[in-house]
Image (cartoon, rainbow, N blue to C red; front, top):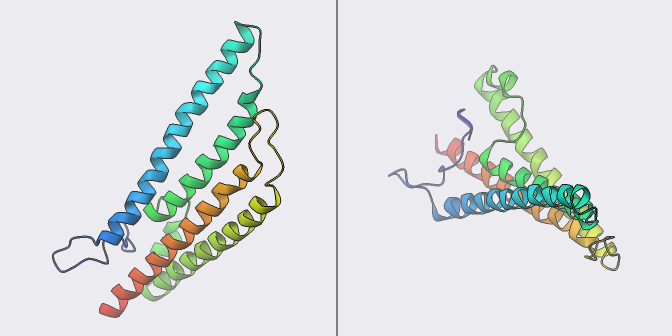
Length: 178
């Protein structure tokens, strides 16, 4: 999480400083994305170990590893990006923004959150189009529908939108409460 004053986790809390159950739910969803991505990374490493063992010891290359690896990388990337939006660990350049006076700094935070929200909406929409268009196309070597490659775009895009909207609302509530 960010150490800057735009850290909005817990802004929807009561006077005792306890976080809302909605914040806890969103944090749990982000944590589930991270855990699932971690499990997929372990599987990815194990499958490449099997690839090397099969190729050089058994002299029988498992052909499914390449296509499954490409699929796994999409899931890890998309779910990690969504969790990064919630945890504010995504790529950003803060030193310029944090050096500005309060008003332009706050405006830049809102603009950045709105861009992330719009990007998530576009990603979810286009991912949905790709899911629908590729239902009947199988992925070579593993037989799953090509739609499985686009599904994480939809999920990640929706999560990015949700996390951004919540951040914007919590920041607005905080600013209006001052």
